[in-house]
Structures are given as C-alpha cells and as structure tokens.
Length: 107
Image 1 (cartoon, rainbow, N blue to C red):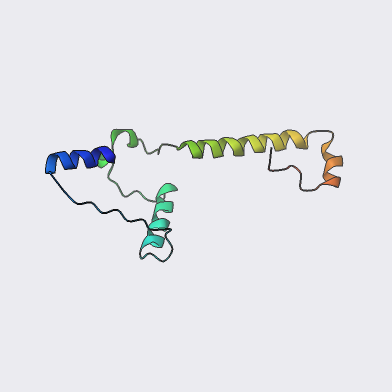
Image 2: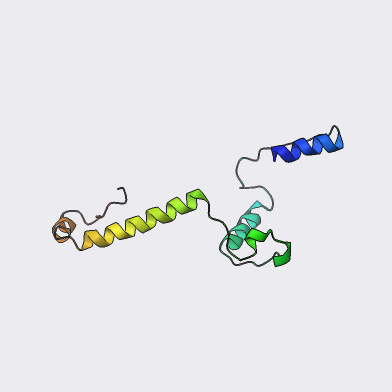
C-alpha cells in the first residue's frame, strides 16, 4: 500500500489522502453485513469473481492459508492426536475418575 501511494504521488503530483480509524465494526452502517459476507466468502459459500478476473494463483479455487490459520490447524490436529494417545494410556481411566476435565487444553 505504501508503494502504491508513493507511485500515485509520483505519477499524479500532490494529492490529499485521509485515513480514518474506526474502532471496531459495531454500530458502523454496513459493517455487520460486510462481516457476514466476508465469512461466507471465507467458507467458500460465494463464487462472485469470474475466474478469468482472478490472479493466476487464485484460479484453482483454493485460497492461500495464513500463518495463523496453519498454526491453529496444527494445534488442533496435535491436540486430537494427543487425546487419542492419552485415552489409550493405562493411566487414563484412573486419572479420569480424579479429574474428568482431562485432557487439559493446555499442553
């Protein structure tokens, strides 16, 4: 974005730019609807962009993953794997009677 702004200024001379911070989406007209539509799009429920208008790397239908999404997926998979191993442990039944909340979500 910074590069684009610098290019605009270089190409078009002096211009005004106003940035406004909106603290949160609640109460801002249209943002709740925009949030719902963004969630639908993220879940693959919308096919609004014609394929030929998308960048080449997005035309196969799969969106890129963020680092946070990959970390969350890895953590969930690791937790599920650990739970499976724990439930097969000989200590599982006894510990379960002492602390039914096992396995802990913090590991």
